[in-house]
Length: 233
Ligand SMILES: C[S@@+](CC[C@H](N)C(=O)[O-])C[C@H]1O[C@@H](n2cnc3c(N)ncnc32)[C@H](O)[C@@H]1O
Image (tube, rainbow, N blue to C red; front, top):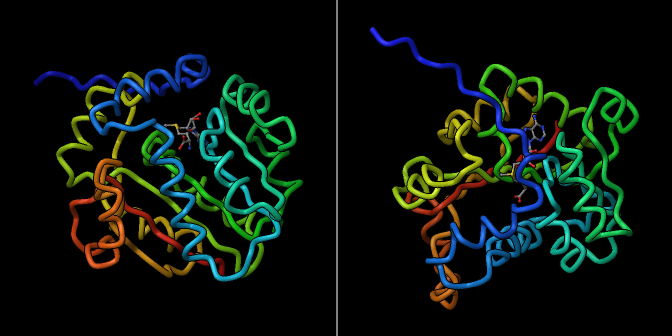
């Protein structure tokens, strides 16, 4: 029997400079700027969060594509970003000079305990090998304030278009997609309570007028991604 090669972890330092350009190419058939999906997700958070969060963290913020929309939709919040890719953080900082960005390490976690009212993590867990995911969710719990909210967005492994995008994307070679039940389990391991689970990103920008229908489709596993909103106990 052929021995399986271990999957090599992608180092996003190698892709930071071309990240935007590659996203643009990969998503071009959706017809609008690649920032459409970033804004879409931040808008979902804004629609669901009840109290304006004082402190927001994007965990695994990459080059900061979502950060600029957090600034737009949460103008009075203190917004920060963190990642394990120093080069991505450097680019994020260049684009957003007024925002604090941190490299994730023990010092960052231990000096920011119980700090954030809202943590957003998008398309990161599928790049973390399954045996390390529990440690990451536990760290996220440490960073959240009691009653703080977490939003996890992940690719929907049941959507064939999503699977094709992942298969063709140069930095998704280490991607191991999470079924919703795995992400829900992760939430429980992190001692967080699930508040909402929705499939999302059903409509490309050409059909954005239909977006109001999403609330009726949220249980149908056809959206490009899904998200879980959770709360720290
Ligand atoms: C596909 S990019 C997504 C970036 C950003 N969240 C977005 O939505 O545009 C994945 C990011 O996850 C980061 N990442 C990978 N493993 C991580 C880990 N263990 N902890 C935090 N971030 C990680 C990578 O460095 C990269 O910036």
